[in-house]
Image (cartoon, rainbow, N blue to C red; front, side, top):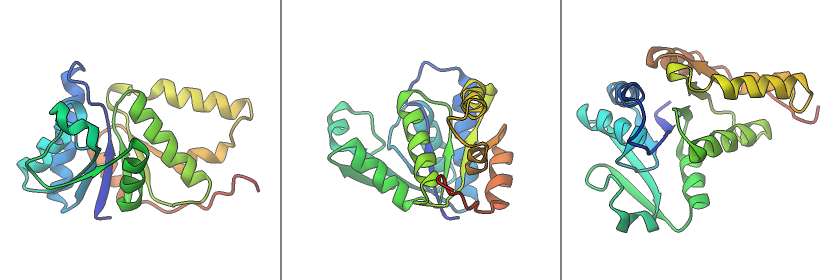
Length: 188
């Protein structure tokens, strides 16, 4: 897997542990020779991942709507920068170019990105690994919500085979290295 898409927060107000883990992830991805596809942001988790990649002379592909250019929030001086007209177009490019997805802690945008890639996988539109990096238990409540959705029959228990949860950067790579696609048929 050469192209790893990382989704994560753009907030600088978050606990330093999230930023440190994201930078560690960026360094580790670069050390493995991966191209990191991300939202091109220079702040928050996106910025920390980018700093990690840059520190290891890795490869970055940032994808962002062009309306962010004038806000001075993008990594523009390193790697490839793809500008789009819309957020929808941005996600499509990121999804198409990625061989795998790593979901770091984040807000509404990150949650939306996670649920889009898992929905597409559920519908058979890709079979790429999706790994949630659960730093400090950030995603525990979302995972519990999904368990409740299974318990109440809103989603199938098999949905849990569409993603995995890692508690550390090392676990992310263990899961990517050992990934076996799971044939899921939502309507079977």
